[in-house]
Image: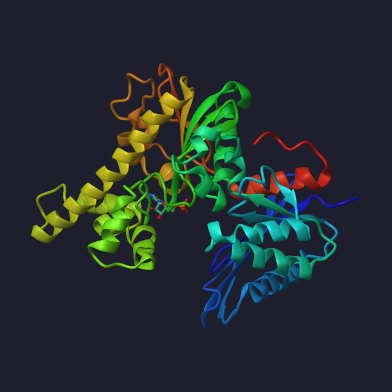
Length: 417
Ligand code: AMP
């Protein structure tokens, strides 16, 4: 009999995050992170359930060494990769292109296809691949499953996935809208249906995943029909450091008039834009604090300026969000719920209030007290009378990856999405 535990690995460009989940009771026997891989002082933290975190700084020179350190930490707690309780490893893979529409058991051919997708995900897929290859070396007998950030969005109709450019050029270079954060959109849309006491197949939901990266999706009866990110995670909403939607001619203009290189513009739009670019802070907590501190008369001119730029960043952020909410009402026709998730969506009541303010005509309404009240689990923040529910639904990408991985290796039918 195979075990009931799944190790979820999220290998980023300079970090590896991991969680061990037990699917029998959804407990988490261990979790941790290795950060700053490739630097002289990488940071490791391993937290066994109910135990004290073990932290240290040391040089970890690559994903191979990082995973070896993770395996050693797990083994110290009797949770090693050879433990009979471990059923599989589930890997988060950012880009699955058009081919991967569901979680997939990793073999040589799957690895080759993930490799072929590197040109459309140059920052993410190489790190994901390094994580999978090392894990295969450390635990050759264990099933390893790739769970793709793009998979949930592969149900988008062709007219939502196509850019209006020459198809020959687009197809030759795999240029189309793929969408990301799919694991989160899948999980949150399903949990929102549960919160409403209905089947996912009966419910239309607008999911707003607002973290440091941010994306919106329109989910009709459990299937994604549109999402705001595109070829890369740059399109769509205003994010912590990314611009989101922008006239593509801005790129030509900056190249021709400002003499910037393609790489400089890439860095500008991905790393120095969004909230950070507009006001100098990419953390919504800081943006809100600066707005508040400018509200009184105590501060000087510097405070007022800082509050004004924070307020403008907030307004640009919220305006874009409202445009997507409105657009997805049009895409879906009928909406049952608007669900907020991720760091900003779960915690920033002012963002939720401003995003939905004045949309009563469309149906969603936020109750001010419910919106301010804090709570751990999924909850409604709309009054009972609202025609469209508004919900806060904490995302749990690790649980979703573990659930999909476990369903695949045990042959159980994966829950939809
Ligand atoms: P995530 O990518 O989902 O981990 O979200 C991270 C972001 O959530 C941070 O950069 C913050 O901007 C935001 N965030 C986290 N906690 C709060 C909070 N209490 N209020 C406002 N924003 C928050």
